[in-house]
Image (cartoon, rainbow over all chains, first blue to last red; front, side, top):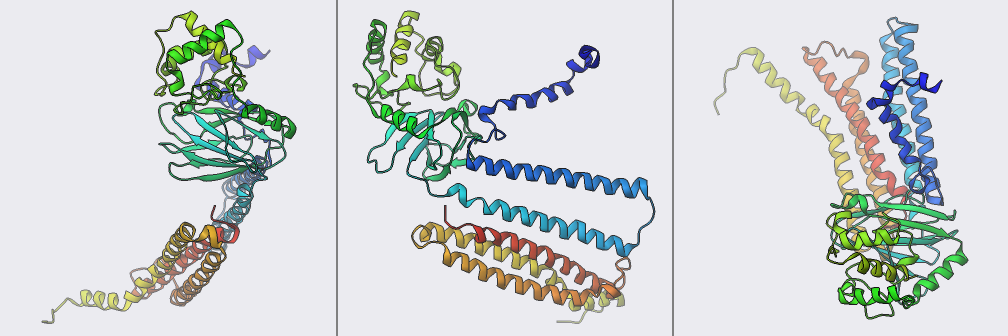
Length: 334
Length: 136
């Protein structure tokens, strides 16, 4: 029956494609409709009220149009028309827009409210995220990259800055956007309350790999978060397998440590992402690929093919065994 | 300067233009007040927040915006009231603009409408100061 109802011609038409496109937004990990925090819930509420209001206005406008053109198509008194135009065309929109503006402005201070203790400094690079956790009273940060974790049920402050270009941090499931501007610090505070894995994305066109500048956001129970943060503060575990040991030697010989830090080792480069606990993160290449051994090998050999204009050179002279050893070393950095 | 002799109709136009110059100015008054209010509020807020906002708070800034808004609304109200008297909606017929008197009324009408939109604009510009408590 379904095959009868939907003709093959329709299935091949551009209209069908337009119907299917919005389905891509149904993945809840990066959706404003999947609100998982106080701030995003407030924005979702604002959106639903405005959507409902727009539907009512649309129906009312078309109802009036139907009324004057079909139901009672007759000349109206100019006096009544003038008052109607003033009331419905000037007064009503001014009051409605004024009320919406006032409501929108009134919820803005909450999204900049002071945090409950945890400060997370995020610095946008080309095209990845340098992340520093500053728990209450900390004098040195706990450094990570390309993943931001939050404790559920409290308000965390995000202090945002950027390296060369303007970027924008957006975790749709948790709250609104905030621009990241070179030379300035902007502040966004978020109060997530549902534990889970979400996706953040750069929301300001910043260059060749703008679309590939993403990250995973994780909301954890407060106890789990405290434990995780303690683990993140520790040095990297030493390699435990022969492959990983060979990988560490390659990491040294190929000069990887000139750009990447692995705390507890001689590798202290600060150009690229900190890899101390790389294997504890859920993604590779700033939110884009699963961190499997195969993907790691492809990334090391051809980073610039996967991510245009990336600063990391392609190590395409390494043979598959060497790439596998490097991947084993990185997979051991838990 | 030698008095030029103009054909009667041109001379009438020139006389009318002289008489109407205030009306022409009156059209522009309300939007100019709106623009000045906008510039003073935004430039003032930017300078305040860049220089002293983080330490001194925003109370003085918000009160200043309130004062500027009251002044702007008062001035626009006065201009609008004068324009309303010039318009005299009960005597106007906008379809006969070749009469100087109707042109005079029409300029008042336009000034009233511009005053109305300027009032809305000034209130919208001032609204953020009502809600935003910090410079962040």
